Image (cartoon, rainbow over all chains, first blue to last red; front, side, top):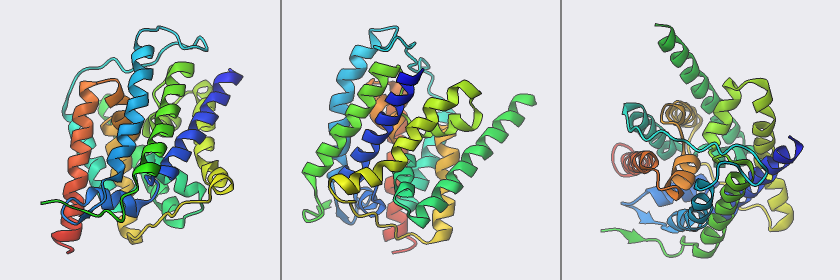
Amino acid sequence: MMRDTFVSFIVGLVFGLGLLLSGMANPEKVLGFLDLAGAWDPSLALVMAGAIAIGFVAFTIAGKRSYSMLGKEMKLPSSRHIDKHLVVGSLTFGAGWGLAGFCPGPALVAVGAGEIKAIVFVVAMIAGMAIFDVIERVRKQT
Amino acid sequence: MITVDWQAFTPWSALSGGVLIGLAAAGFVLLNGRIAGISGILGGLLAAPGSDRTWRIAFLAGMLITPLIAWALFGLPAIEINAGLPIIIVAGLLVGIGTRYGSGCTSGHGVCGLSRLSPRSMVATTAFMTAGFITVYLVRHGIGG
């Protein structure tokens, strides 16, 4: 119980450091990457390349195990169903990402840095998540 | 044609930051057996039962104190937010609803999902990248530019 809480804390910290160091936590840099028609900054493609190179090895190992090294059950998504939710949701997320240059992780890191606009963004994002929960609850009742 | 802004290009910090993100995702799945997807971790906190809350809060707490640690280690990198507040609010709402509806964001689908070669995550990543490219195009070169 204590060990996996500590791991979560350290993972959150290392993940956040990676976001800051890579430039992902800087919306202006993110928008420079998304701006293909302007002066394009390809840096963030290397962030993905670096992360996936390590991630690929780890998830290949993880995929062969039923329990983690701390004896926790492997909770890997098993759904292979590609549906409207996945596509429409991701398009909606991408539009928001392109408007502000923030996705969830970097926004949280920027909140930690005391950025007022990041705090407003995260409050709106949590409101968006809550709206989703309410819609889903209503949908399931009908 | 695409014009690369070589002066803005920061290959080494991008690559080393990416490696840190990869190590974090690797540590999370190998030790805790979970996907390091930020929208899922945060969104789950709104709906999760009590016992599931501790690790989510610990993860988010780690992310929140990151700038302090970064500041001590190598100095806090720039965070430039040029969008106005109304845009920030609309963007936040879209990101919140979209990531929950699409079951993931840049970390869950983009990093972890692509690392797992998940077809769902490949579709999701293609969708949000495309929407991001189009949105920035419209804002900078279309309606706004």
